[in-house]
Image 1 (tube, rainbow, N blue to C red):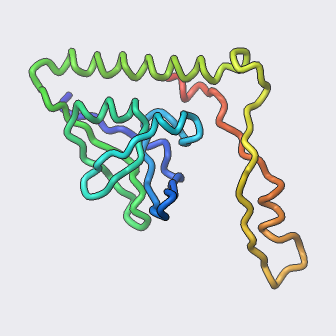
Image 2: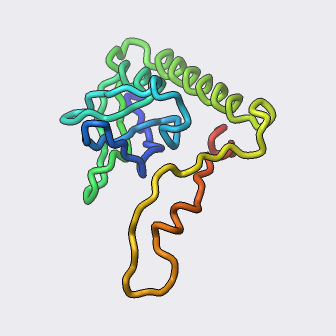
Length: 162
């Protein structure tokens, strides 16, 4: 096999920096940047833009020539086709990449294990409230609804352990 297509798990995530730039996020392993420490995310030069990526995804991409696939309307990065830089022993290369990916998934599954955390659910309180109102309805405003919601981290699923 000459190349492999990786899927972005952060297609619905953007990060706004302190200097008001919005960054796209690409990760093969993690569904949201909050699942890792901030220091585990770095900027990666993806063709004509900088994208926020986790260190494990960067490790994979640095060993390959990368071709990103974008959603036409939004410009969201959906995929990355990777082709090994060194093609001398492709079977060995792909075996090493597979072992790396399995190790990352195993480590993350252990991190998410409820017994290890000692929690039933790990949830994050939303620290942002939007002041949006719909002047045509007498119901609650969007802002009041958002203040009451919490974000729950994704739980370990069979899909994540494949």
